[in-house]
Structure formats: C-alpha cells, structure tokens
View 1 (tube, rainbow, N blue to C red):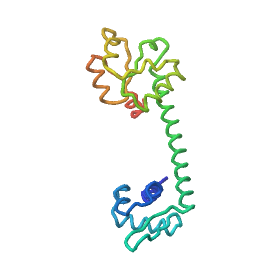
View 2: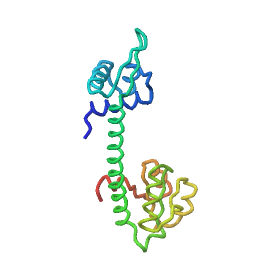
View 3: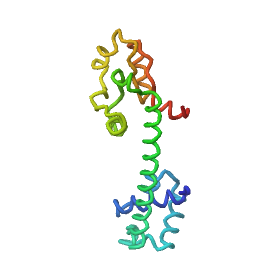
View 4: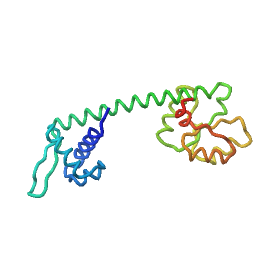
Length: 187
C-alpha cells in the first residue's frame, strides 16, 4: 500500500521525468504540497539515489532521474497497472453479477442501457457481449433514442450508471436501475 510520502515521491519522479527543468515551486503546485515538503522529499529522493540535482548556473538547478530513479518509477508504474487491472477485474465481476441477478432470458429483449459514452460504456459493452450476447446497440446516450423505446412500455428495464442519466430516464416516466448504486449497496 502506498503511503502519502511514497505517492508524493512517485508524483515528483513522474513530473521530473517529463519536465527536467521543473522548479520546486512547480513541483509543489503539481504534487499539491508545500514548498518545504517538496524540499524535504527532493532531498530524500537524492539521498535514496533516485534523483540527481545539477547546478546549471548559480541560481538555477535541474533535476534528473538517475538510472535507479527511472527503474524505481517504472517499477511503481508496473505495480500501479497490476493493481488497477485487479480492481478492474473485480469491478467487472461485480457488474456482471448485478446484471445476472436482474437480466433473464425472458426480459433480455426489453433491457436497455442509458448513460454517457465513456470508458464505463466500453466495459459495459464487453460484459454484455460476453455474458449475455447483447450487442452494444442496446447502449444509448441520447434521450431522443430512448424515448420511443420506453413510450407506453412498462416492461422496459433501463440501466444507468450516473445520476444525470437517472434523472433523464425518470423524466420519461421510467424508473431506472443504477448499476453503480447496486454495486455500492452490494445487492
């Protein structure tokens, strides 16, 4: 688990890797900590051998990641990616479980999904195809596309994933099922 200092150190290493002419003031603004804290963290990174400071002129310095610093940054990035993929797999499984509890062969043709086109839409599309053989044409983002589908059809089941979409679907007289709210309450 990352501590706050470890996370700040990673932010510093990442910023310096992309901006070798960074100042401590810029680092402070980027990381969101005081100049004094940046100074302490930079000194700690130098002491660990992850960062090198080179004086360019009497009043200007440049920061460089050492080979160890670059390796450390890459290792932390790898760890982050692994953790995020695990989280994504868990999240995907929870979504699939919620949908399995609500979608049956009998109601599958009256199921629609409504919300913004975003990364969640891509994940949802993948789950629907793999788990239910439902195409992504059932995922809508425009109210004008959903309106004729739900008109006078009380059996229609509309899933959403954000509160703005909940409000829009409710304006059509349909009570949506918010997937994320279902996950949050664990049912």
